[in-house]
Image (tube, rainbow, N blue to C red):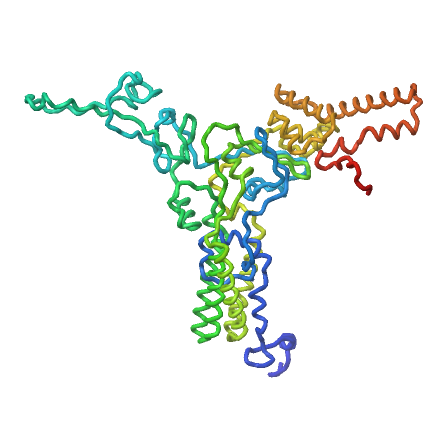
Length: 555
């Protein structure tokens, strides 16, 4: 082949620009668009990004305008679902953000049923010798008796110390003084009053956060990972023992992405210095500082509601019902229910609202100037910056595919699935029985009543159709649950009650119309349909249209 002859590859490459100095070469005039593309991916993680102190790191972020909001949310996003307390009067139509991380409601199949046990993981049960009143709690769950100089009183208890202390254990018993050297007593010694003996008593000043009464758990020692997580999340609260918050995970994918973005920003500035591109240096510095300024204005932490009192209360069990007919029973204490379910999750910001708008305005100006400068950078800098934004956009898009549990540190709680074996397949066909073996709203509702042994929450949550037939069925279901009849035919009994009610209605129709035997015609059937609404027999009461009000216009 002769030199200079065209090859298929050269003919193909001739269709594209070549070189960087040639007017017909590659150009990056629209590089500024890459800096603002990907707003949806960044906005999805905006609250999680600003919940950590790593939001202060100067770095490039795709679509930083997603963080430039005119106002800040006061609460975390919630999920729509009916929720009712089993023992209390709680009734809500939303489920908290952190609670939905334990059991994503969008993943539940229709008529599914689960029983979860959620409890505090940072608490431990105190030994019996530490559960008596007066045991002083030290940081991280350690306890010790407090020594005081008091007069001995052996009549207070058989052991001579605190009440209810086991005899012979040494706890609360009298501490004998060391034997002194034998010496002659002088007249001064005889006139001196006797020295009171030292006894071991217990302080009654308990911390307000945990009242160590009998059966009350102690707080365990914080681990190194928890301390580091607290330091990264909110350095001002790192030494606090009351941790009523859910911080981001220490090794969260967003934390790793923030560190990589900072390293990538440093590499961009270094290369711009080597290429002697002053415009690129200023542009990268401004756009990275703008992200730090905006992050500082949006820096926050979630605050969970807590119980200020320590009196004995019933368990905080709650039942959640989705629109698809799935039920979740949460067994927990009242403290856990306040933090995750019945309480509100508030956002506590570092910067006040007044200064937030001022800082956001400064960040917006820095962002606009940096975008203008990016379009005037050198060819090499624009190529490097464009490639960086393409990679970061892909990373943030991939982070949107991960569940929320990878981003938030929920080590404060322990969640166990304790669903009974005979209720685990509530959303599947379990037998050939067309009634009891087929997934249905009635069968799943019976599973929930069987585990709670209560029916008040059913009415309060609107899960029960508001008819006398369904109320009668619920009374029988609660009785069967309390007597332990797990094999009660819930669906079959519901059908029997409905048939009995319809038969009674037909009998009343016959008596009113004076008909006998098979003389019921079309007119009687129409009266029956008016008296028995078959729709409200199958739908929850909150989904049934109520009766028309007097004077309301017809539709």
